[in-house]
Amino acid sequence: MPHEADSTGLTTLLWLICVYWNLVWFTQQLTSLGQAGNGETAEQAAGDQVQQKPDPRALSAIISRSAAASMREILQRDGAASVEAFIGRALATYEAVVSAFDAGDRDALSHLLAPDVYDAFSETIAQREEEGEEAAETLFSRIEPEIVEARIEEERMEVSIRFTSESFKLPRRPAGLLFRNVSSPLHGVDIWTFARNPAVRDDGWLVVATRTEVR
Image (cartoon, rainbow, N blue to C red; front, top):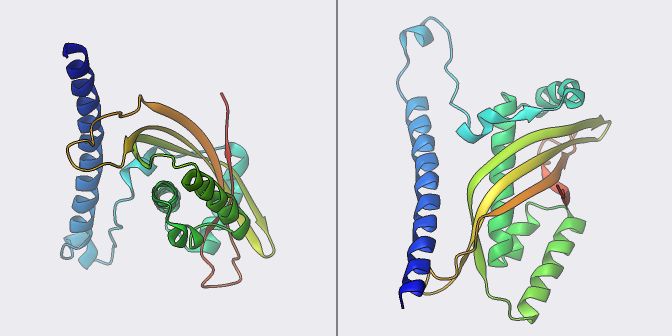
């Protein structure tokens, strides 16, 4: 049927575009790692150090004026080299949580989310399983981070980041059926809050709150 063929071709094209941009990002990461592992340059021999390039998607990170001062202190306490490095880690966590949620991987989520947030995610997964909802995978084509709030207390540091994203939902199906029923582009705006205790050296950043911003 011509109409069905056109629809399948369009969804295949959209999927290939997403794959292309993810491959571009992955290639940039490999290039950055390769450059970081090269031998010392003439400037390094003189005592200068060349830092590893940050996540290219984090270069566009924006910090609200109200969060800038607190963020500088948080970076100092956390040991992060730069805002870009911090955002790069937050982006990795964001994508890991979304991927684990799509896959129903509760074990992975338990290492990334605070207990109350984990319970909410786990409950949604259970409801999805009970209703027999078709599993799907989220493929991001764009994520723009913005630090909107930063707070420091005696035993807690918190950073809230707005993730503005564009993504597609791909059904988890056998090979040959993967390109069918690909969703239209999905636009999302989520604000996630990350927190950790600066007094505990091994205490990592966990997602302690999530909410969707309606625009």
